[in-house]
Image (cartoon, rainbow, N blue to C red):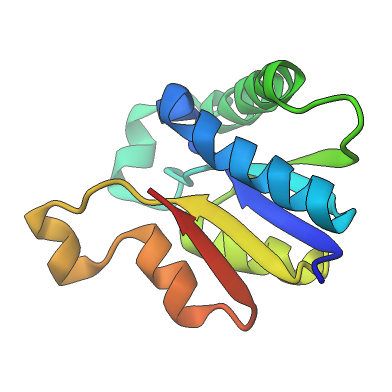
Length: 141
């Protein structure tokens, strides 16, 4: 049913993301799917905040995220599952949706933390992905 599954991992909350990745692994195993495991490094360079970071900060953050993602998947994805790593850079929900198109995913798996009051006004990334995705989205709580 699902050939390519994109699973988004927030490495800032890696311990909470283990269940999300395990859910995606179970789906991949049951359907013989490929996993595309991604994380997104926010883009601070375009905002006023960007001026407070050294020029090479973003590339360093991307490199660090790539290393952390490889370590995380090595620990939590069994050897019999086909998967690849993706490190996006920019708006979290936009990068998830963009890469879903790039890898031709037919399912997105992501987690959602309990929303705070501010999320009802601006909407969390998970809600935005669900709202704008043209494919099925599985939200793991």
